[in-house]
Length: 438
Length: 83
Image 1 (cartoon, rainbow over the protein chains, first blue to last red):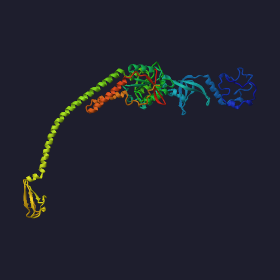
Image 2: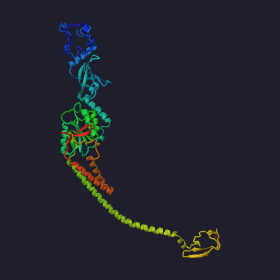
Image 3: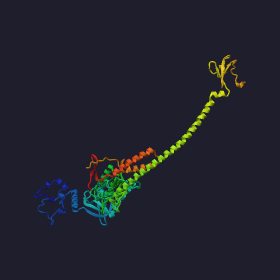
Image 4: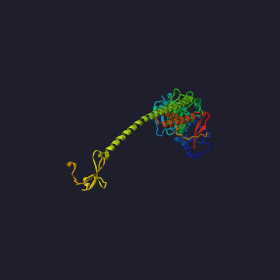
C-alpha cells in the first residue's frame, strides 16, 4: 500500500510539486477505502502529519479529475464484476459503435455502456423495456462523475436475446434465398470421400468413422478441424469451411459435433458460419442440432441429421449395396448391347431382302427408259425423215443444197432418197417461189 | 505428413466414382435406343466395360485411413489422423 502522507520530516509547502497534484495516481490512486479516512478517529491529525494531505485543506485542494478518478479506482476496487438484473430503458446505439442504456427497477436506475468490442458476445441488442441480466463492472465515468456499469455480457428472460438474434439472421438468410427448398442438393449415391468439419478430438469424428467403417470401409474420411464451441468456434469454423470450399476434393461434407446433454450451439447460429455452410460447393449434411433445437446451420444444409452417426448413415452407402448396383449395371449393359446387336442383325437381313427386290425393279425401269429414249432418237434421225418421202439435195461438190439460192442453173446434183440416189440437173432456179405460193 | 498431396480438382471432378456410374447408366440408356448406329453402339459398350473395370477396382481398394486436411505454402495436404 502506498503511503497516504508524505515521508516523515518537515517539508515546506514550496516543496510540493504542483504536477504531483495533477497526477491522478498521486497518493489516491490504487488506494483502498480505508485510505480515505483523512483523520484519525478522534479527528485529530496524527503527529507525523506535518502538512495537510491532498484535499485536507483549501490550500491542498485537489482537481476534479483527481477526485473522480480516485472515486473510479475505489469503486472498481470495491466491486467485482457482478450480474445485475433490471429493465432496459433509453437504449441508444451511438455512432461510435457503443451501446448506452439505463438499467432500472421501481426504485433505481444505473447508466450502462457496452463497448463495441464486447458486443459480439451479446447475441442481439436488447429491446426497450426488456428484462435483462447483465454482467458488468461498476465504475465511475469521470467526465460526468456518474456511476456507470460497463457491461460485457447480457442475457434476457427465456433466451430472449438469442431468439431475437436468430430471428434477425433468419430473416436475412430468407431474403438472400438461402433457405429456399430448391437450393437443396441431392446427396451423392456413391461417395468415395467425405469431409467432416468438426473438432478433431470430439465424439463426432469417432462416431462418423465407426459408422463409415461398418458400411463402406473404403470410403475415405477427411477431417477439417475446428473448435465447435467456445469463443473461437465461429472463427475456426469459418476458416475450416473456407479451407474445405477451396479444396473441394470430396463428394459430400458433414458439419457435426458430438452429442451430449444441453450444449452450446451458438457457433452454429453464427451468421458467418451459417453463410459459409450455405456456400460450400459440395452437398452438406448438418449434424449439430439436437432432436428439439434446430440451428440455422441445420436450415441451410442440404440435409439435417439428428446426430453425427445418422449423418454418416445418410452419407455413406452400404458397400454390398454399391457392389450390387454395379453388378446390376454390368448385367444391364450386356443385356442392352446384346439386344442392340440382335436388332442390328435383324435389320441387316431385312435390308438385304429389300435390296434384292428393289434391285430387280430398278433394272426393269432402266430398260424401259432406254427403249423410250431409243424411240425418240429414232424419230429425230434424218433417216426417218427420208423414210417419210423427203429427199436431200447434194451438189457434185458433196455439199448439201438446203436452199434454192444455193443452186446454179445448169448444175448437176444428186437427190439422196430413203432407198438410193437420183442424178439430177437444175434447169432453172426460182428463188422466192415457195410451196405457200403455188 | 502423407505424400498423397492433391491439388484442388474442382469439386465433383471429371471422373469421380459418382460420375463414372452416372456415365454407365447413361450408356445403358443410350444403348436401348435402336437409332444409335451399330458402330457407335459398340463403342458405347466398350466404354461401358472400361468404366465398369474402373469403378470395380476403386471399390476394391483397402480400408481407407482417416486424413486431416491441411494447407501450407505448398498447397493442400492430407496428413494422417488418429481418431
